Structure formats: structure tokens, C-alpha cells
Length: 63
Image (cartoon, rainbow, N blue to C red; front, side, top):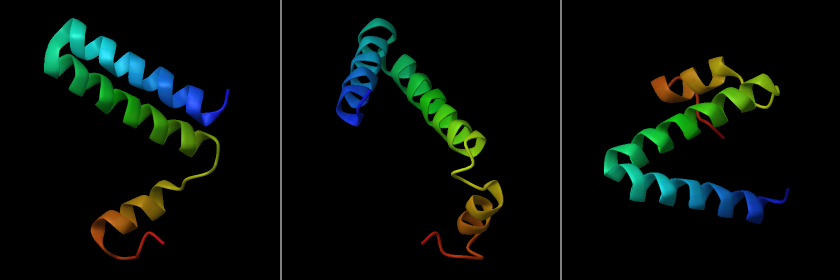
């Protein structure tokens, strides 16, 4: 699956949630999708939680 098709699928899912459950359904779905993306990147080894925490607290830049 290429990134364009993945983007279309994500957009369609968020549109479905917005139409079915209103703004709060859309917002909750978007939050859970973001959390799932973070967990997936951490599980694949492409992200380190310590580096993210340091960037959030201002100890280190994210670049």
C-alpha cells in the first residue's frame, strides 16, 4: 500500500467518524490514530521514547 492510498483511507475513516458521531467522534478517532502511529513507530524501532520526551521538555532539539 503506498502513502497516497493510506492517506485516502485515513481521510475516509475520519470523514466517516465525523459524519456518524459528530465532532467528538472525529476528535477521539484522530487522537487514537495518532497514539497508534506513535506506538507503531516505537515498536518498529524508528522512534525512541526518551528522545521524544527530551524534545518535549526542551532538553534536546528534535532535529
